[in-house]
Image (cartoon, rainbow, N blue to C red; front, side, top):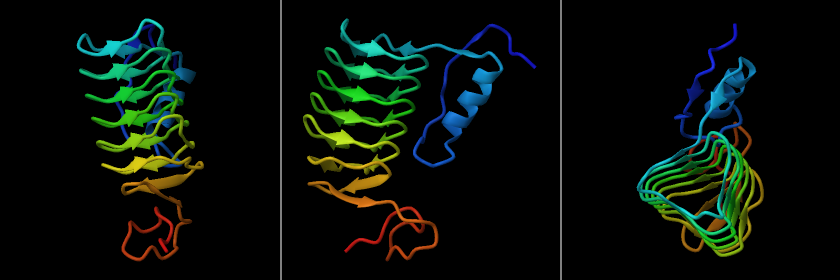
Length: 175
């Protein structure tokens, strides 16, 4: 069944699981002919030189600076900001007050928690997560977690590993 030629606005959050509902729903609807619209709230500040991909949402009071690039289906939540020349990969999510420094990048389906920060020129890999109120000043490989200040980076665990008090099956054991 083909969908009518209406435009859809993607409103599903958390991207960082292997079977992300954001990606699954988007891909299934796109196969049926759905067309997604990007949304920039009137109270958001988006530089003329910024690039905004299909289906991306920029919420009130967010800032997308000069030459920043959002790929498709990126969520830039309330008061989040992308510095000059920064980038966010497909399906990335920036929670309220999350910050990307100038030239920093987050990969496909990466997640920045509340008040999380990524330092100038640093890269956060695909499907990685920077926990709430954390600040990472180093590179984070794909499928990793950054937490604390300064950010400690650990790989995600395989299901069934002991995590010593952390969320079972999600975080790697911490030394």
